[in-house]
Length: 275
Ligand code: ATR
Image (cartoon, rainbow, N blue to C red; front, side):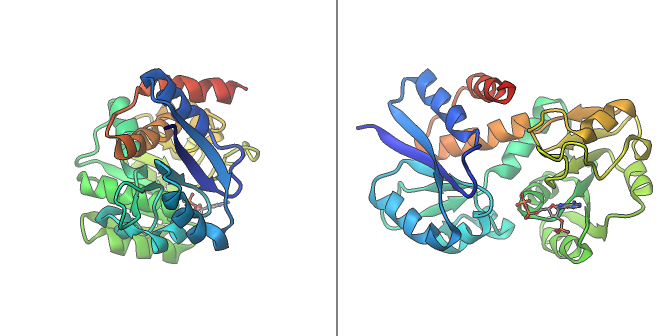
């Protein structure tokens, strides 16, 4: 019988996950369907239990439900540390399992672009859910992190948490030029620059240097203002497309045991972004 998969979020109608996962199912000849479900935070528990009861193959969790979902499921140790999940698996009939594949998505995106992590100095902008996933992943991979956030406390708390496995310090967003001069990689994990506010950026080209790698996890638009600034400074720029694809691929593997076709997923998302 056809298995149902989905993404739970609110709003979720513009999610690119359905087109990406359905392309992979189709390419692999798997008779499954992936759909977007708008779920209010106060119905999330019922929705997850219901999805399990109805025999869903798996779901992704997106904004603003990732933290709330963690409280409902049995989280794997990495997701518990991060404090948020993006993937739910229903295979175990006694427990609903939650995972976070965002960090692995970011790791594979940088690795695809030929960027090493071990021993590198990384500046992370933001201290929300995405920043937490990325910071734990890269600290684990041997990077030295500076986490800079508009709300300084959140950066300091995240750095403290990350220090249980690696090297990190937290700060507010100031003295960016000096901090970036000392960094190899700059990662924007905030929503600044995302459609429709595409003129916004936290960092400008005059604060960058040519040896810098600038990775923006935003993928709509593909070339954010931050990445345009990176180009103007002669820095290397990496957009958020492959992180999105790889976080989805890792979820797909958790659900099906099969690693999906990356090119197919990437092309499906690109087509949709072109409109
Ligand atoms: P996500 O789960 O996608 O990471 P989030 O948890 O809401 O989303 O976190 C959003 C991050 O973007 C936060 O670090 C937020 O900074 P604050 O902690 O100060 O709120 C950051 N952010 C959002 N809008 C911003 C802006 N205009 N300037 C700077 N940082 C911003």
